[in-house]
Each structure stands twice: as structure tokens, then as C-alpha cells.
Image (cartoon, rainbow, N blue to C red; front, side, top):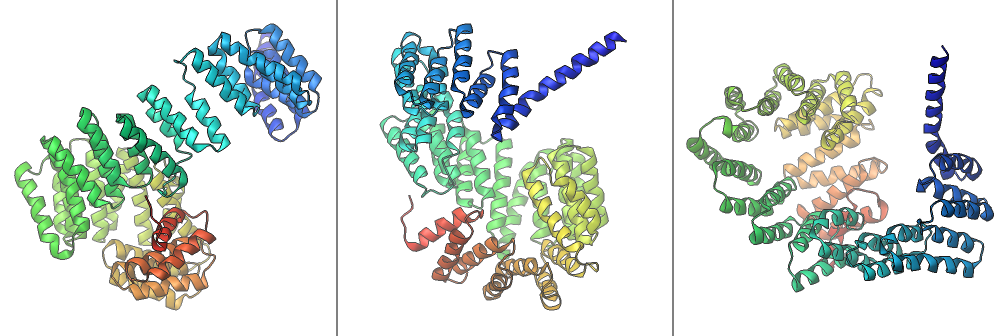
Length: 593
């Protein structure tokens, strides 16, 4: 019994101690320094070499104005660990807080002198200077250390200090110096740069970094500069220039063709089809293996479909047939067969042929994942053909057969979406509630949007009529029946004025009008939302789409500029801000590099 009590007491004591760091930090962050000091003192005594506990303890004493106690703690630490030369910085800073600047300077110089003796001490000393806001001393420390030992890597620390000082030209130079020192630091530098580089090419930091990169690349061409330029252009969504950089690297060492392919996919996803084709045709010229040809041709056909008008569909169909004649409808052409089935159903309105093709493809699947991809597409086409129950069975099979995979989460979203189309809102809402935390950000976002749409309308409308009509309009749009979708939305806007879903209905209908080239009616809808729903969560997107409508469909650039300007000045946190600023500057006549 006594042993059990001892074990319990020991476990409980361990639990209590494990809570101390968190509790101490909470007190510290709330400015409750007396309570924090008591806990940090206990933590420091138990682990005297742990720097965080020591630093937080003396900071608490300094905040309380007890500089003598802080000095005592530092001196005791120095007696026990005389090799920790950064403690001179802490002593100096403690004197500086008391206004004893001569004493402080003496200890600062003592710390710097220790770097002259042992340059490796610079990391602790430089960090301590930086932590105590003595940035010039920190920079001086790094300069001395590198002079004594040129192999030391201090560029990241220096760059961070320059960034804190707002000297971005020096910051960028330090990061590039690190890459010059060792090209393996390219990815590390990208991570640090990400907080300073935006997707706006006219941003002053983007321009400054680009100029430094180009200057170095001209004087001394290196793969690392091309990699960083490619990364910069991708951030700015200038995929063509990024691909040019990656091709330059490939032409030097033939090692990064996968990156060119990746950029082709990114370009395609962002509707920059010319850049995508440039990447894909380049790859085809380098590798003519069957696997590469089939993969690239599938992507090129996807682009051709998106660029084609109905009058061009026979040419698309012919290109698919030529590939099937050459390579057959086998396991290795499954991605092409899925793509072709989508084309048959959604562009040629031949769902029966598409369903037959995919059912025949299932036995040829080379993996469970590939089989799941076929079933997902087959389910989509069954929804297109109003065969909802059969679609739900297929989606559920994928969900069960490929548990925890991204494809399973996609299938679960399809189940929820199909249930929503059918008007089974409660079931759909339950499924979407789970998917809001999906590991796939895209699925999580889509699930959240649909979840909120249902939640905000189902509880307020016991009859569910406006929501049912809205769901039907989205189904009709999915089925390429835009004319029926538009008429269905008319019922909402005419018979349910003021309903919570009216702004959604007006916006969705405007998007359909735009796709059908009925720009004047799209404009009317957007203006109604601006007038009657100025506080809608959709308003920034509505204003951006209206600006794009004026620019690209109504040839009224002056009106477009007005609406881009509204986003810039009235919605600074909008996700459309950067694109609005770019468009506004172009329309104003600014020269963008």
C-alpha cells in the first residue's frame, strides 16, 4: 500500500511540475511577473542550464524593478557556468536598465572580446544581444566572428536583424550571401523570404529582391539564382517567367524536369494555358517515353477542352480517338479514359456513352486508387444524368475502400453535395460538419462554404423552399442546364425578396449570365447586391466580379477602375485585394515590372 502511495505521489508531483512551464508562461504573457518569477525560479533551480527559464526569470525581476536580484541570479549562473560568455551581455543589459551605461558598456565589450578569442561563441552572444534589442552590437559580433572564422554561417541571423531594422536591401543581400556560401540553403532562404515577398509584383520588396537577384545572376550565373527567381515568379503568379528559369536550369544540368512539369500543372490550374503548354511541350521534346507522352497528352487535351468552343469539339474527340487507337483502352490509359468520359458527358451531352466507358474501365484499373478515381468520375456523370442513388453508392464505396485518403474525403464531400442537390439538407449538413476539418484545404473550404449556406438558411426557413430552389439551380448548372438554372433563380429573386439566400441567388445568377454572355443582366444583379446587401459577406467578391465584368465584357475600364478602387480602400483584408491593386494600377497607367 505504501508503495502504491509513493508511486501515486511521484506521478502527481511529475504532473504538477510538467504544468509549471505552461503556467509560468501564461503569467509571464499576462504581465503577472511576481507569480511568473516564483514558478520560473523553481524551474531554473531544477534545470539550471535551460536558457529559457533563466532568461524569463531575470526578465521578471527586471520588470519588477529588482535589478539586484536579477544581477545575483546572473552572477550565480556565471560562477556555475563560466564558459557561458553570453552572460556578460545579460549583466550589461541589467546595468543599462538602471541607467549605468558605462558599466553596461564594459560588459558588452567583454562579451565581444570573447568572440575574438573563440568565434564559435558568437551564436549565443549574438542571440543575447538581439534578444535584448542591442542590434548593432549583434551585427558587430557577427562581423568579428566571420573575420576570425570565415566558415561560420551567420547570414540568417544578420538578415533577421536587418529585417527587424527595416533595411530590406541588406536583408536580401545577407540571404543571397548565404546561398552564395552554400547552394543547399536555397529552400531555407525561401522559407525566411516568404514573410517579406507578396504575390504583387509591384510590391517594393518584390522589386528590390528581383533587382538583387538579376544583378547577381548577370555577373555570376548560378542555378541557385534561377531557382530563387523561379520561386519569386511563382509567388507573383507569373508562371511563364518561372518556367523560363527552370528551363535554364535544366539546360545546364538536366536535373529538374519534374519541377517544369509541376509548374505546368500549376499554370493549368490557374488558367494560364499558354505557360502550361510551354512547359508540357518542352517536356515532350526531352522525353518521348510512352508514360510521359500519355501523361502530357492528357494534360494538353484538358487544356484543349477548356479552350474549345462547341464547334471545336469534333477536333477534341478526334485527338482522343487517335491516342486510343495507338495505345488502346487499357490500364495505362485510364487517366485519359476518365478525361474522355468527362468530355463525353459534360461537353457532348452523351452520358450513356461515358457511363459505359467507365464501367468497362473498372476491371482494368492498375490500383485501388485508380479504381476509386474511375468511380468518382462515374458518380459525377450519374449525378449529371439524375441517377443520384447509383452515384451515392459509388461515392460510398470509394469512401469505405480508401479510408483516410484524400480521395475518400473527396468522395465524402460528393456524398454531401449530392444529398444537398436532392434536398436532403440535414444529412448533407452532418457530412459537411465532419469535412470542415479535412486535411485537404480545398475540400475543407468547399465543405465549410456549403455547410454555412445550409446552416444559415435551413434554420430560418422551416419550409426550406428558397434553399431547395437554390440547390436545384446549382444542380442544373452542374448538369450544364444554365437556362433552367437562371429561371429557377428568378423564382427566388421574384418570390422570396429579402430572404437570406437572395444575395447568393443574385450573385450565382450573375455568374451564369456572364458565362452565357448576358453581361448587362449580370451587371444589374451585381449592382442590386451592392445597393441592397452592402453588408453581405459576399460583397468584396461581388465588387471584384463586377469590376472584371466592366473590364472584360462591357469594355468600360473607367467603371472597372472605380470598383477595383473600392476594394482597395474599403476592404483591405479581402482576398481580392492584391489582384484588385494590380488591375487598378494597370488601368491607372502604372508601369509594372
